[in-house]
Length: 318
Image (tube, rainbow, N blue to C red; front, side, top):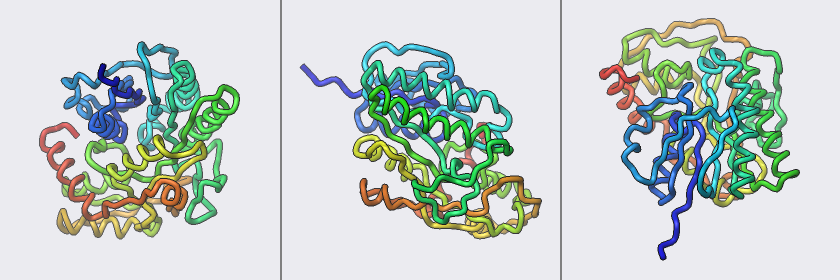
C-alpha cells in the first residue's frame, strides 16, 4: 500500500509568501490545505493551483473557531495583514488573527498532533537599539505607537506559541521574517521595494522618507521559503531570524532599481513616526543550526520582481 503524502495547513495561503510556500510544499510531495478569508490575500496568487488534486482551499477566517477533517502533519500560521497599509486599515483584524487566530490554530495542531510553525516578524524588535538584531534581543517597542497593532499581535502570538508548547506539549517553531520581496507582492501594499518599482514603472517620482539613509535588508522570497522549510524540518523551538543580512540604504535601493528601469526622480517626505532607522538580521543561528544562508542577490531578485509587476500592471492585476 503506498505511503500517504504528508499534509500541511497553511493559514493565509493566498498571501505573498504563503502562496510561494504552497508551491514549495506541493513540489516536495506534500498535500496542501490553504486557509484564507481573502482579507488581504489574492486569489490570483493560488489560481494556478486550483486544478492540482493535492491542493485544497478552505475559505475561512482563522480568528473564528473551525475544524479540519483528516490528518495534518504540520500547521503553518501566516494569516495576518503584513504591510503597514493593510494593518493600519485593519487594526482589529490584525489583533484578532495574532491572538484568537494563533490560539485556534495551536489547538488544531494539538488535536492533530501536528508540528506548528508561527510566522513572526522583525517588527517585534521595532526600532532596535541593537544592531544587527539577534534573536535574544528583546526589542525597543511601543505598545501604543502607530505600528503597535501588528508588533504587539506578533509578540502575543510568540507568547501563545510558547504557552501551548510548555503547557500542552505542542511541537512548535517560530520564525522572525525580515524584509522579503519577490513576485506576487501587491503593488499598493506600502512596502518599499514594491512602492519604488511601481512608481518607477509608472514614471512617477520615487517617495523617499527622511534623508534616505535608513537601511533595510532585503531577502528574496525563494530564499525565505527555503529557510522556513529548514526550520520546520530541522529547527528547534526557539525563534529563528530569517532574512538577508546585507544592508541597503533607501537611496542605494533607488539606484539598483534605476539600473533596470531607467532614470528615476525622487521626492523626499518626512520620516513616519516609529519607522525603524536600521534593520538587519543576525542569522548566525539559522546558518549554524540549519546551514541556511540567502543566495539570491538584490539585483537578480529585482529582475524577476520588476518583470512580474510590469506584467501585472499591464493587465490590471497588480
